[in-house]
Length: 345
Ligand SMILES: [Zn+2]
Image (cartoon, rainbow, N blue to C red; front, top):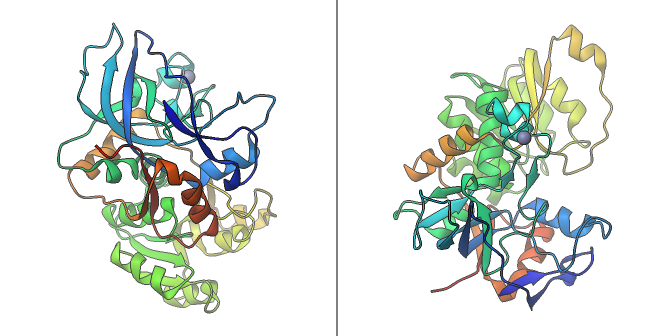
């Protein structure tokens, strides 16, 4: 089969389309003919940081996959050839104490498709049955591929970990990123008032279109002062942190007493100073969140199937254009998801 592979770590220039062996299907696995696969910032990290000691090359990325069942293993009964499906990229053992308690994203051997194994920038992928969800006819393959990684991340962080309540004020950093644009919609679904940080007027109006009540443009003034003014100096109940080092201190300072900061990423770096007095005196909670458990994944996807959550698609590329798609992601000019349409049939 064809795949958009790389043979060593580096930038998008390392990506090329090559022939690779077809995947083998184990008895408890499903072979999916990939229709669409979305890019995530995560794919750039894997490409840049793929360690030759642990990766076997050629390798290919792609966590967010939709497609059609091409073959089922002997022990599969819930799926049949021809089913439209979307894949949950979270890999877990199913046996450790966390998996047994239904918290798969806490699994001791947790991994993600496109990092722990080759992903969806290829014509086929074989995955375990528990990673596959049926896709209703009304949802396109491109939209389905835009959902899994960012929407489950945003869902768990806001709904479960920070437990956003109706009427609360929520600040979403990186409001035009994949997680951010999902988080705006999910925070609105939870009944919150949403403040979203973006970087241009155009992205700001897109964030408003998704439901953000207030948009803060980080390139046109002091967003922290603006936020304080907009909340009458009270601060917000919840901050969704994706930015890391560049905003960490101000994110903590923007919280109301008793507020919660939930972190799911660190696009500007993982090391930041924390004023400990802020944490105890203001009685803040700092909460981590990663991906989602099986129940949260099916919950968030059900909202998508029902049309209550809508992924934003920036652009669609072919498999042959995967390098260009990585370049567009790296340039950071997109709003929403960049999709590889692997199969045009
Ligand atoms: Zn486990």
